[in-house]
Image 1 (cartoon, rainbow, N blue to C red):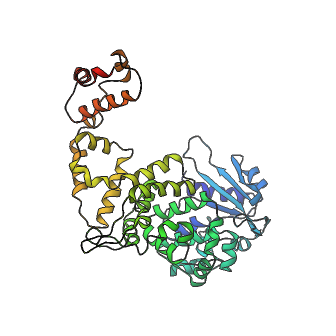
Image 2 (cartoon, rainbow, N blue to C red):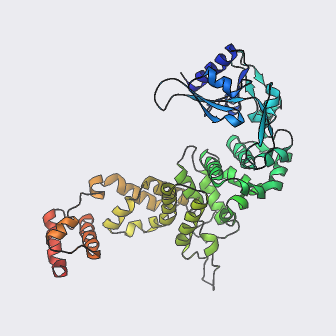
Image 3 (cartoon, rainbow, N blue to C red):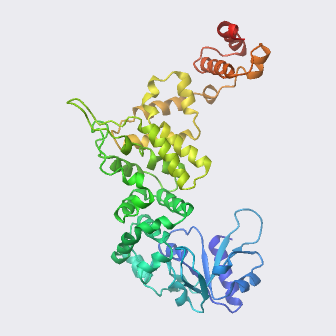
Length: 447
C-alpha cells in the first residue's frame, strides 16, 4: 500500500480501538497544497504503550516524548513507516531543543499549541477528510504566511532551529514571514549557534536542495541568521569583482545567481560546492593598483579549498562529502585551461570523481557571470567524442613489471609509472611492448 494508505490504516486501527487519531503536520499542509508529502505523521490520544500494543511492528524512537514508529508489514526498505505521536503539552526547553518533560493531553487542541508554525499544525480526519484547524493555519496557507503559533519568541526559545525552519518554509513555498515572527528571529538570531552542528547542516542542506536556495539565503541574510550560521558567506557581500569577468556584481550577487539555478533535488555536494566555490575571495581581495590595475583574488582557490574543508568539518559532514565539496572548490577554475591541456592532463581532469558535478558547477559559474560557455562546450564535446577506454585505458605496466625488470621499489616507481601513463594518454604508446621499450630507452640507467 502507499504511504498515505498505510497512514490511514494506522488511524483506522487506532479508532477501532476507541482512540482518537488524525493525520497531522506537514503531510496535511502538503495535501492541501496539492503536493506529494515526503512522509506522514499521525497524532493520537493513545499512549505510547497502547500504540505498541496495537502495532507489534513498531519501534520506540522517542517514547519519552510520546513518539512511536509504526512499520508496515513485509520485507524490504520500501515499506512505509509512520510516526505516531501521543497528544501532549511540552514543559520547559532548557537545552533549546527537547522539552524537559511532556504531559500527555486528551484533545488535539492542546497538542497543536506546542507545534512550530500554524501551517504545520493542521489535522486531517481520514474518515471524513475534515480539516481541524485550531490556530488559523488554513488562513495562513491561503495568504502565504509563515506564522509562529502563539508567542514567536517562546516558540523559538523552545527550539532554536525553528528560526532556520521558518526561513526554509518561506523560501520553499514562496511565502512571507509574518512580521512578529520575523522580528523574533532577528532578535534571537545569535542563539541559533546553540543548535547542534548536525541539525544545522541538515537544515541548510534542505534549504540548498529544495529548489529555492537563492530566496532562502536572501532570507537568512535579512533575518540576521546568515552571519551566525555561515559568517564566511556573509562576508561575500560588497566584495567587488573585475567587471570584465563579472558584470553581474559582487561575490554575494554572483553566488546568489548560481544558487538560483540549483534545481530541486540536486545533490548536496553540488549545492554546497556552488555555495562555497568562491568562499576564498573575501580574504584574498586585492584592490586595483595603478591606472591599468584590476581587482585580484590571488590564491583564492587554495584559500577557499581550505575554508570549505573547515566549514564541512564544523558542520560534521562525512569525510566523503567533505572531499567532494572541497574538490569542487579546488577545481572550479581549471576549465579555463582545458583547451590548452595536453591530452593526458585533460583525461585525468575529466576522471575526477563525480565529474558531472564539476561540469555543472562550471556551467552555472559561467551563466552567472560572463556567460561564455566555450570551455564548457569544449569539455562536453571531448567527453561525448572520446571513448571511455581512451579516458581510462587499461594499465600497460605495473609495479610488479618494474620489479621483474630489476627496479627497486621506491619513489622512482611512481615517476616511471606516471610517465608511462602520460605517454599512453597522449597517444605516444599503445601496447605493453611500447611501454617496456619506453622504460628501456629512458630509465635503464635508474635500476
